[in-house]
Amino acid sequence: MTIFGRALGRLTKDIGIDLGTANTLVYVKDRGIVINEPSVVAVNLRTDQIVAVGHEAERMVGKTPAHIVATRPLVDGIISDYEVTEKMLRYFMDKVQQESFSLLNRPRVVISIPTEVTEVERKAVEDVVRASGARAVYLIEEPMAGAIGTRLAVQEPTANMVVDIGGGTTEIAVISLGGIVTAKSLRLAGDELNKNIIQFARDQFNLLLGERIAEDIKIAVGSAAPLEEPLETSMRGRDLVSGLPKEVTVNDTQVRQAMARSVKTIIEHIRGILEITPPELVADIYERGIVLLGGGALLRNLDRAISDATQIPVRVADDPLTCVVRGTGILLDSIELLEEVAIPSAQELPYGS
Image 1 (cartoon, helix red, strand yellow):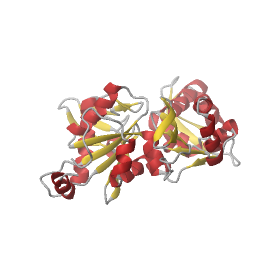
Image 2 (cartoon, one colour; image 1 turned 45 degrees about the vertical axis):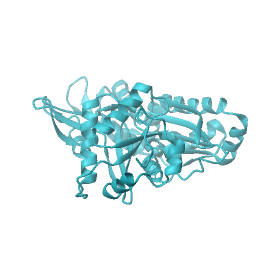
Image 3 (cartoon, helix red, strand yellow; image 1 turned 30 degrees about the horizontal axis):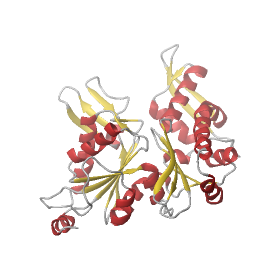
Image 4 (cartoon, one colour; image 1 turned 60 degrees about the vertical axis):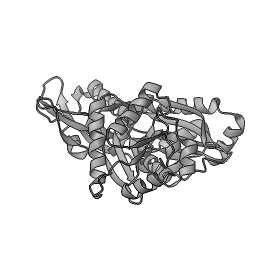
């Protein structure tokens, strides 16, 4: 680390970011997780100005006038709107830096990305973070960051299998010796389950649901395998026949059936990764089990459904929503590990520069 790098290190706080389709989490060195907000931005089309970001913008979804659009700038884990993503990240980074009075507020940033992104998509992430105020950017694959955040021994010559189910993507990876041996980035995750519920309501009840209502139903009664005690919840939306408000009651069995095909697809891809994993590593996974990360890991009995299909023990990580961002935080404190697991960037810089 250079003398200039040390000086800058005292004046700025390095940042770890989990830039997700559904939520963005920010970790600040020596402070922990300081931001956990939806990846939603409300834009005024008349003035091209940002109206709201995060929780405030999410409350506007589906409720805005014609000239205000509340949108997610990331789709399937990939930046779909560069300018809006940059403004969202700049907003979060400015929020983080408010407590610092230095004129040199340009932190180093460790940010997670899906495993199967193209070079163009990878460069887009790096460029947008630099444009948001970072002086150096380090890219880390989401499963690796999640495994590190779960305190798995990723550098040992034994296999760890993680399944990170987020909003836009499901990341399945087998990790050994500080690298990803086999992996699959599946563009089917929590958002797709919400769409399944919306389609079910349309088909069964002629009821049009909003995305937030579908998400609430999934959280309230969603499951991947039968429950010991049945659950019910109300489903409110617009009747497609009369055009009037309508409410129906649904149970966990109906919602589970609505999501069954997507859940089965995720499980089939987990089995597919196991089939192409070297047998020595499969033996380790059989002994150590599979770890579920991300918001999708909270779906009731998903661990049981995967275990039944693979005959391998499955557990949900502690606080699965924050595993990836906690992993970026650990990397901020471990230069050697960061250099070992970071993806080469378009503008490679040593950590201390």
